[in-house]
Image: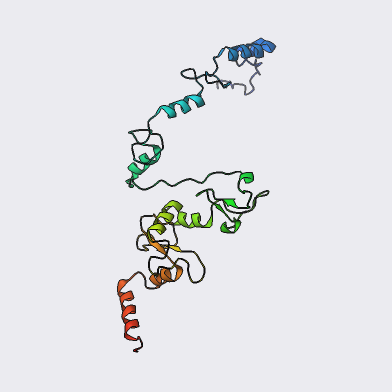
Length: 254
């Protein structure tokens, strides 16, 4: 005789679920907010005068970091005004040391965020966010994306944009031009024949054309014709000497 098979019922009785309070304050009901206010008021405030609660040494987190940074010594690199973070170096020089970059190279100045109401002076000139020079609005290129309520111009002037592409600052450009007497390093002209400004010349074998230059391969300041002459000759002295011999051989005899 076969034994009867006993199957378990698939339906389970629904058990009543009781929601537990998340914390002791929830079980108190309306009085929980009053207790929370008492606990927050009991915490000490920042001794610097702000309303935020104190975290360490009687100061809030923001005031503590500010006081800590002011007490730290300056960077060990000569001419650097930043505070040291570790090993006597600031964060920027620590990155340079890790990457093996020269410590003596000047730091790149970041662009300032200048409000729209402060970008123009009484003479109608516009300030550059990089070199902080007051220039005519024609010295600024238009941005690709226009913002409502803005003048639609770039924050950096045209010269600073070019210097940024070649990896130098405007101060370095001005110092290099001063060493050349304010003129082209080849033809000694201060202004190009076409009326354009002097351009920056760099070694194309170091940084190919099309990308941003490293700044170390900048050779000098040239006018557009002299810079184009070197470019068409592919920076080859043999071609340039052959051009000189060609001109001397075809010079008219007087």
